Image (cartoon, rainbow, N blue to C red; front, side, top):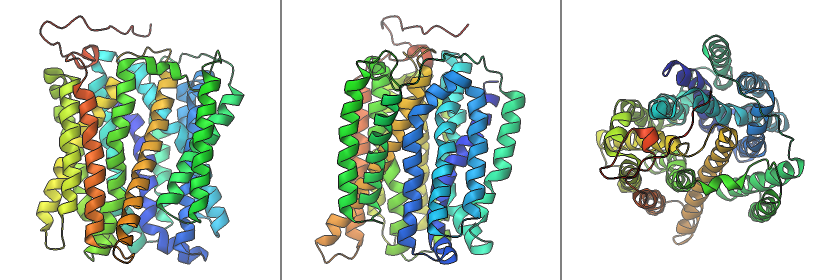
Length: 471
């Protein structure tokens, strides 16, 4: 069951992660078919991420109220319906609404899937389980552009949504048969005020960052919604600390390892989130490659993600969380920066080697970071913890794209506004440096931090905290 459970859950995560990137390469074809401009169609990307931001905070309450297994299967079904709606869209309005509806299903799949894994896995086996869950989830973003380019070129853009149907059906069937999870329910009252404030906060931040990085609207709208989002986030915090049952409980950040996982993981994810935006642009606009050629090069990082599965548990058990996470973040960030040294004359094998090593380090990092976050969080707090993690992930990815887009814009203005190779180099160096800084946060942790999860015990270290298992 250690392998079966995360692989079942990874079906949904793979589908959601792949879908969020596959559409990018198909925007021109979709825009032509429904009679709009590609730049306007980027509103569909934004509406999807806004939907995630609105409903992810509700996922923990939904799982506690109606059962995590039930909500997980329902989320896959809603995502499938949204996929069908996208494939039959005939205008900009219908496509934007369909992507928003699809995002509703996706908002529940990832956090509830991770919650099911945490509740069904003993803490000392969590690293191995997270590795099996992380690999398929990492395949999605890198396989999306390749698959999108292939389907759009040789079939039609509709297939990028139809392909979700058999995958979703398989996920629902496997979850119904094989998922053996004690479905603990805690029907606490819903925090309506908190939901409204959190929705405005996270949607405002994600929408604002999306508009700033992918301007489909005047930039003033991005800055205004970003300001509204930040203000609502402050108001939410003031509300949550005074509420008995907040939607997302900020008191969970009292746990040092959970707090470190959120902070370090978000900082590292800024660079990781920027790469799928920067690299295809540089390969296509800067080096003149086709979308399919670009996707073929970037896909190699998926092989690195798969390879990391076989070393993650060994590394964390032998060396411990702080040092492995620290050095994985530092060298992973440096490899992101190295991509800024690519030129049109750089050989493809060299590019693929850098991306392969980066894929290994990213997968090792996220396997450990995700597992470490639950080392000092008990099962009663797990539902809220998974929702907080999911929100932090979405915001950090959006922030990474926004930072990369802003750097390209500012750097481009220094030489007339047209993108040049130097603009991409600056962007890669900056986001790579930010990711590398995450390593410092982990190296400051005690050597035996999270040893109840990793199995590592430093000589002379105090006894690790034992998190009680669910009866």
